[in-house]
Image (tube, rainbow, N blue to C red; front, top):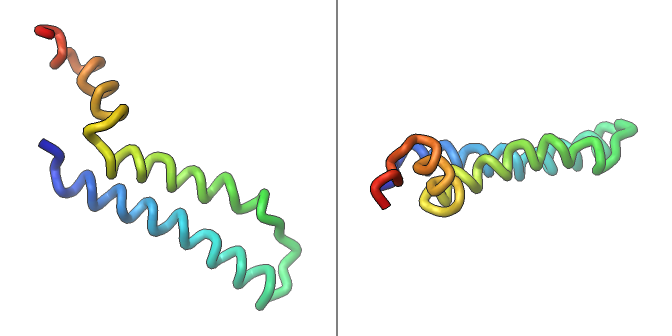
Length: 75
């Protein structure tokens, strides 16, 4: 069973990752910074990918975790 704090942490990471585009828009269009979307994309992906993995814990991330923890040894 997936613990609720794991899903909540995943949701927070996804929210922060999507919010990076808001920071990009404010910086580029309101503050006039010389910033490109390629400078924001790594920060966006650094939050979105782990957030999705935590949110969908029972998927691939859960199987990898169980494999390395030894809980699938009996199967």
